[in-house]
Image 1 (spheres, helix red, strand yellow):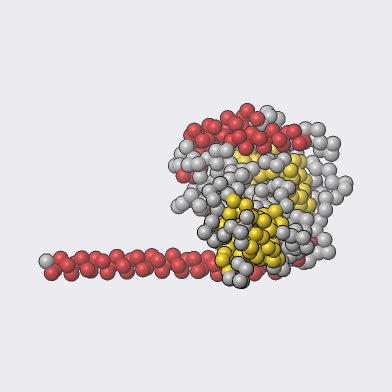
Image 2 (image 1 turned 60 degrees about the horizontal axis):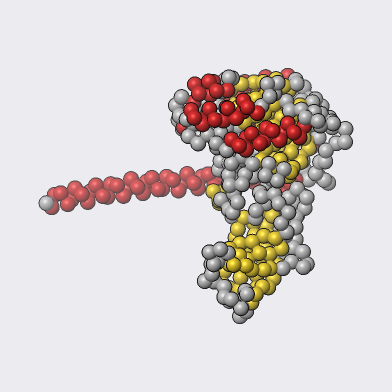
Length: 454
């Protein structure tokens, strides 16, 4: 019996050592990733020049190509149908340049990559995309969950998982890669294919941009790319000034201005068509109120001189929410959408002088505290609010941060948050202190408002 107890003790100690080693390894890996992120962030923030103004669309800009790009539809095929129909309705009779030349789906159109998901998505595309319009798809990590992803892809989409398409003289490279050890990594062979095709396309492009489409963000580029990304793409794209890359995977909203980034090339995150994700206090994986109301796509236009226009469109409100214009995709020194320059043009949010707070009771008996939203410069956002509630004696009763609902396009002049019914009392007055933070971490002055619970 004593011998058995000693054996059990030895096994427990061994398991504790293994657990400790695993935990230590995970912590070490996270520490390394944080260090890399900080270092990369420092490099990104220091690049480029600060310009007098951000570019506006040139009056003589006439597109020679128009593409619609969407990502992460996750079986929300009604949004896919709406995006296609809306794009045709927007541009069929466009006076400057009519029509849509191509639709590009950037993967994660499924949940776990099984055939019914492929069929439902492909049926939607075939019912709504016209025969004369180019239609290209790539695989996302959710499609990689099945070993037979290549067979299903070729069966339902009719082209290779990695393909190069010429549209109106512009090269469009669609890269699915091939699953490597995990659904998050690509094989060396598929990366070599991408590298070779990028080099060939850039050499023959002249002044034109080269468009590259894939599912995950290149690491450390657009909003969401320090977590939902792959570093395998960075060496392939780096230094190709006229390359414009479009990606998804993160579900981070496109109307965050950090969703465009220029370093040695241009990166664009195109949001999501199903469910947003955001970060809060630099912590990703946040799903705030209304996050399921996601239906964004990008409209991409270019001419042969190297000018490019990229707009974000919100299907739920039927409005454009961002408009970026690259004056010369070949001139790296003139890149305007660097982190450094965008931060310089961002301004701290400002609350109106007459900002006020109010409170109402929710259906479950809790309290909804609302306040006048802070104002920001055109093209920028309030990303977060910090709120503090104090009673008449100055005692702090509630303190929190929450993500501002900038990803929901509406005309509301107020923001709000919910507090427990145990915190506030009917008939009593309170002060609400609110601080707003922009996407580039600029803070408003604290605004103090008062409200009384009825």
